Image 1 (cartoon, one colour):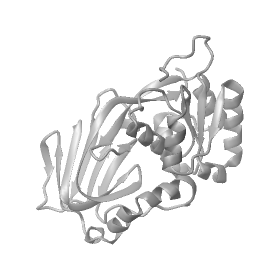
Image 2 (cartoon, one colour):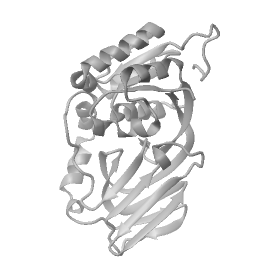
Image 3 (cartoon, rainbow, N blue to C red):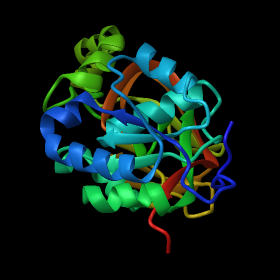
Length: 281
């Protein structure tokens, strides 16, 4: 495995470009520009993974190449999910060139990734890795920005389909269909919420919102997350390293993507779990 350092000859690390098919459809020109800049500055291998298994395969055979995502927040989240699943999340910093609609790139902006393709590509080539926290659940899922449990359960994704979005969504289609058709879709969930063992909400009272957020969608060095619980006539805020939610069945959103329903889930902050290549200070 490669480290966070540069090669002995002082040149940039070799790269594995993971091109989101949706990004190519959305803004092929930005994808081309970013690809040209990266290919002109490093040894690059380009991959077009169109399924989770194909993504796993190309990551497993990347050698010492650093993964670079060209696409949306969802594409980045899926790559981190795959690296986490294979216990390789901290082995290499990850690069990103954000391409997509504005609402699909909110996390990238919050993390400090340049929005313009040339600047983002140059940050991949000459930037510095910044270690960031990650929210990991006991089911093996990861979240970049946060988790949301709201009245009505997890919402159906909006916008385009196709590419990584539609192919990966199919894998959870059965769970999502259950979440959308269950009774919880019509009522506020009744859940028990504990933050580091402190009771924030119990099942006798419905909640309108449970929101877990990493501060600034990144790491503030504290290794904690921010918790907000809204119930009729009540608002509770807390900071914790771990949050557990238990109920009869509830859906939730991870970085805007619906998951569930589940009966219990615990989310824990993993401090400095991954590194993102950002412009050097």
